[in-house]
View 1 (cartoon, rainbow, N blue to C red):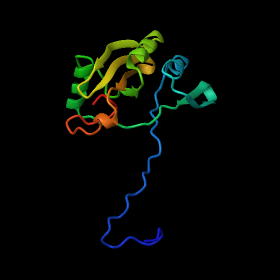
View 2: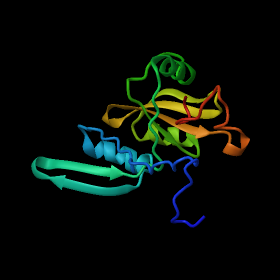
View 3: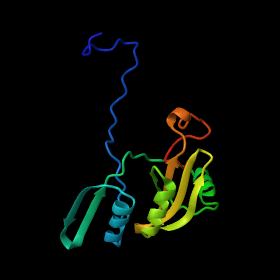
View 4: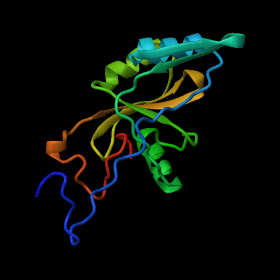
Length: 166
């Protein structure tokens, strides 16, 4: 069949192209400089753009790699807190960053001003997760996947893969 020929009537219609091209999480930071230094310099998110306007308005857009939106019900949120921290501590929104080395990144971020809520902990879904209070009032998870896709991450129905902490 030619590329420009219509599909036969009994063929499934092709899936529509995604309409969302990017996820941006916008965070208000009272101490803008400290938050930028933490997330850009300590965590290592490259600066994509920076803009300023009237009245000292400033924003820095940091590249954070692939974005996902993980939606958890209250029971799952409690389960994640219990596994990572041992008690319920997370606010409604928590930001998770996948890194290559959870232990080294956690130490670097604590040295840069984050407060450790829980040290790196191996989860039942085979990731190494730490929990931190970060600048701008964000609670963050730093996670490292311990298994590759070839080893089964993403294929277990009982432990779906999300940001490494579901």
